Length: 135
Image 1 (tube, rainbow, N blue to C red):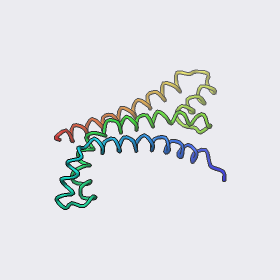
Image 2: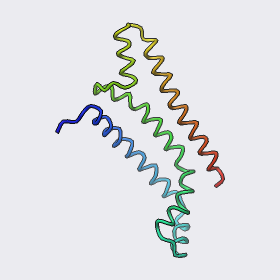
Image 3: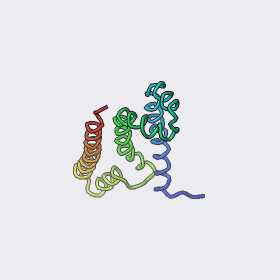
Image 4: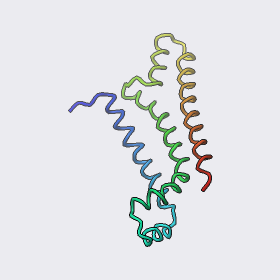
């Protein structure tokens, strides 16, 4: 079976980020005291209700910062796709360099785009953290 370059990149980045995100979520859930789980289950709550009403609101505050950091890392990690000849932002800057022999235009533009994407994500994360700070 032949995979396209795009599909190969998506699978690779998904597996890599998925492993980190799974660990972030697992660590966040384990950070909640076990007594809260036991108390909710002893009151007759279902596991789904326990997770939705008690655990996840607390976990969101815990794992928003590392999750956003992982998302920013994923955006920056897309530059690795240029090694498999997928034309993404860094590869496009390389193509501009090879055509014009002037590195400033391509690399400064790609750096500005990476900065804008990561800055936007960090701003959204700060907003979510401030909104969920009530816990």
